[in-house]
Image (cartoon, rainbow, N blue to C red):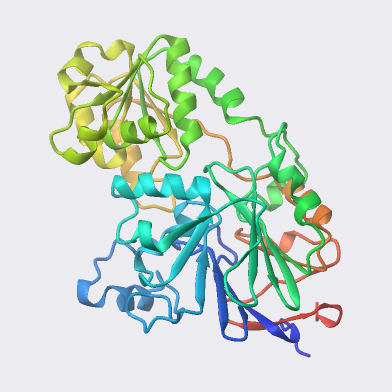
Length: 433
């Protein structure tokens, strides 16, 4: 047997994205003709900005590497009804390509994820998916057959998107646990309990976002988002302009609570206010900005939150926390923002890998605001990931979704796959190192 090969069995696995990167995750487990695809994420290559021609959208995005060459599941393919796509959580690097999936391909996710996904679809963030017909929710702790020989069970894990799940994928000859993205808070139960309820698989596929050389010897306690962020927000005396990520509903709740404690009005854009209302986070000090360019259907649905005009925001700006998504940043030209604090809290653009991030910083500088990043990592520390891998006691550990996955060594054997190679499972004791 050659290096980077696992010996013959009925089950195979192939990785399309997520190797030596924190952007994009897609892998496929196959038994006979049955196919189970875990996650369908956007690969952050800054190539999506190139305008593909509509009539050749998928083929052109495949040509430049934005969409992997995976057969039978895309809108331009002859559909393979033996395939099912399962989503671990709703971050773009795990779901960003769902808009290109054929409408006859089933997509499954946790119940909480589907609830949020439906709301994101309503505000136009998840277009081109027939959510009602195509997306199905799966309860935690309930094994389901997605095909004759492939079974999956979802387990809750802690991450900065509600509904995040790990998966146990079972075929007649192999058990695979996929961690998805995980975090271990000091009081966390879900992620910490994963080894007890899903441990000792044949294969563990585990994220390694924070498994980097400079973090290997540190094991900081990850505070809950509320414990970390509310005190930091309360220390800011200037007006706050903030940018957030709709998928982190907990962050919205934290901002609203911190504004209440600070006795500030907090003003959301209509799309975000819709999410706030959908998760029952409305409060007397919460407002939504009247925006003539906003989706009128969304504004009509916001019935529990009082509206406010940009003129009213300007007149009361010293006592306001104001949301400004990057694509709406020109609205700040109408406000006295000089001297305000711009709080970037995992909103888009997420970081320097996105070319618009530099443009955001330039806007903030020209407007005379102070730039502050306030957030809590959605990912466990390197030491915690090592603990989780050891506690899972998998025969083979496959680290991915990180820049240096090779730094993680599992308790038994560790295997680093290559993109696009089909590996036969699971004659593990003879696997080459």
